[in-house]
Image 1: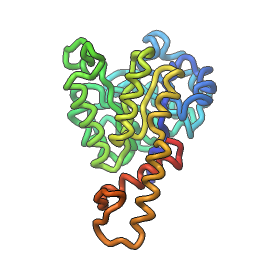
Image 2: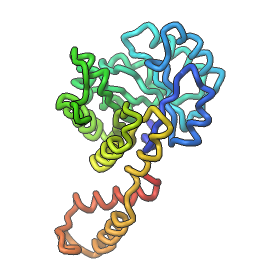
Image 3: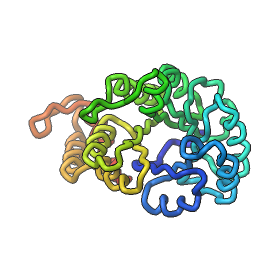
Image 4: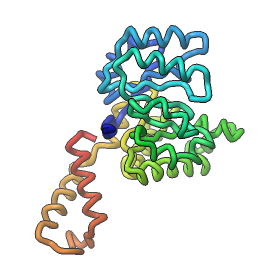
Amino acid sequence: MTRAFTLGPALLFVPGDRPERLSKALERADAAILDLEDAVAPDAKSSARAAMIAADPDPDRVVVRVNGPQTPEFARDLAALAQTRVRTVMVAKAEDPASLAALERYDVIALCETARGVVHAEQLAALPQVVALMWGAEDLVASLGGISSRRDDGGYRDVARLARARVLLAAGASGKRAVDAVHVDIADVEGLSVEAQDAAASGFAATACIHPGQVATIRAAYAPSAEQVAWARGVLDAAVGERGVFRYEGRMIDEPILRHARALVARAARGG
């Protein structure tokens, strides 16, 4: 039986050829993503795989991002993974559901970061080995021939916003979780905070990041405020004995609102 995706809310990328950074990453973040794809130069991928095997990554808190199934590196990455205890694999540039058949014994995070990947998000999410979807803005725009995922004001362009929403909806439709994309402007703490707060409120389970300094901002964004938790507990207490719709503090409460309250209490219990 496939495990549920429970990692998060802050997932920190670590270069695959620098596995010695894993322990420090795990001290700071909720989980680490050891990256064998974009973070590793082509001529260093073989040594990165050897380093991963030697590092023996923690199977409970380390995700390994492998190269896309369209590349010759994919099979080599899987052969290396078989020599580790790793259980959770992020597949870069996931597009064709059939290409993930070789990962049936793993929990898979399918990274929808191309036009084809986003269009096929629903089929990818439906696979039993897929526990979560993630999306990526920069590769997506590059796959369309574009040059920037963001406007001059820092906000995402419409095509990126559409992809983000579609991946979240596809994951939710199959009962899976979704991971929000990295915020590449490390100095833009305010922008990261706004996006992570929106991700948490919209239903994302986690946000990936590329720098340890981003972890605290993400955690704070996902953690419900004391006021939110007090309201959620109050409305759930008030619901005991009620039948159907009722009023609480002047607001109409029905089942969708109760689900919001349960989600807030659950997030508070797990710390974000």
